[in-house]
Amino acid sequence: MSKIAVFPGSFDPVTIGHLEIILRAVPLFDKLILAIGHNSSKKALFSLNKRQEWLEQLFSNNPNVEVQHYKGLTMDFCKLQGAGYIVRGLRTAADFSYERTIAQLNREMDEGLDTIFLTSSPQYAHISSTVVREILLNNGDASKFLPESIAADVAKSL
Ligand code: ADP
Image 1: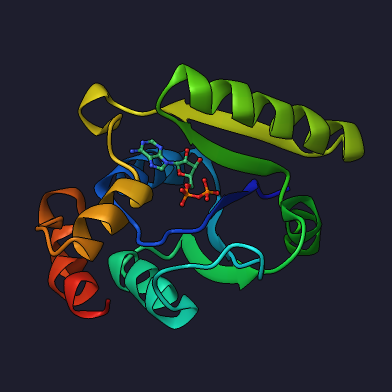
Image 2: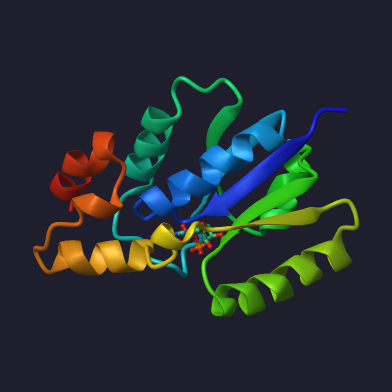
């Protein structure tokens, strides 16, 4: 049976922090689905199209990576995709206590669904999409925190 994992997130926008976790997760699974969650209650800065385009561009050479988007519960999306694993990145203890609760809930509702945590390397632990958005909205240069190939387009797409 092939091992399928979902890496869910807002990717608003995708950062080098996400990139690190994704690149480390790829070899662990037969297929990794980068899943952009877009629930209407959470208003994104960048359009779904752009967020999807950036992820597709970054992983176009990797046949084991797929980009999709979904609404609703992550666990329902996983079931639909036949995925047995959710991948999440951990930066801080605060990330851990939040993520642990979600992981436990997911597993209680679906025993076949395990969450795999990857801890970020120290040099990426302070990077978040929230910080990148804040810099961009204040006309700062966030290119250090963005994958090089998409940085210019992200700044232009505000
Ligand atoms: P969400 O809104 O679901 O938290 P994000 O796009 O912010 O979506 O994050 C998706 C995943 O990527 C989460 O597991 C988050 O912890 C992880 N992540 C984001 N930035 C980093 C980083 N710098 N290092 C490690 N993991 C990260």
